[in-house]
Image (cartoon, rainbow, N blue to C red):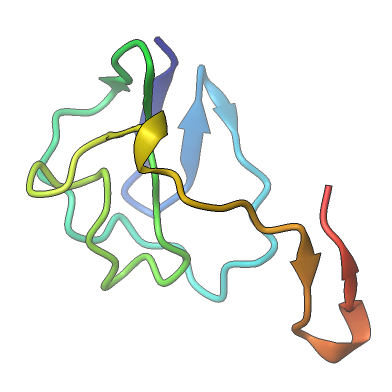
Length: 89
């Protein structure tokens, strides 16, 4: 039921709060053909790749939101950059 909005410069907002995404090298609206702001359907997950200018993800109706059953793993350890190796909360 959350609302996702993405500005022209690629800043992502969830429920009107800008996400802090220090892992991105470059923000981008990317291949987005959904109407924004977009309400995520109940029991679905809105996913976005970290290479936003070329990622095909929930911003495009060819992929859309995914169900929880489609999630096959969770990142728990970061290996890159080497200076930040460690557990991810």
